[in-house]
Length: 79
Image (tube, rainbow, N blue to C red; front, side):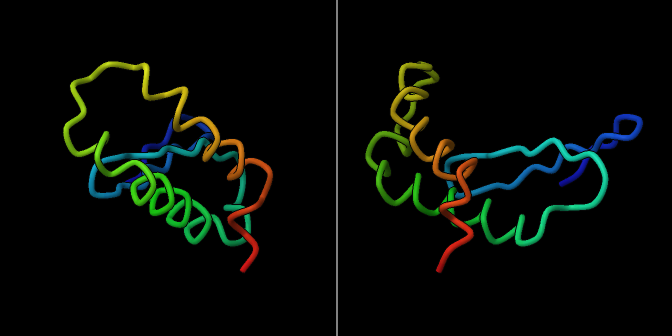
């Protein structure tokens, strides 16, 4: 899914239990779809028990932060 806001685009990637959004200015970074998909798969695979029964408590965001940091560091671009 994609939402346009002026020159910005918000691209939403969805997993089974999570959604991850990227705000893009200009052209898509190389491999964006693959990296975002890998991040979601990793988050969901490692946290399935918590995510499938998630109550809306944002405490889980601290646990998922490490996956976002890996994404921002480009670790999902490798492999």
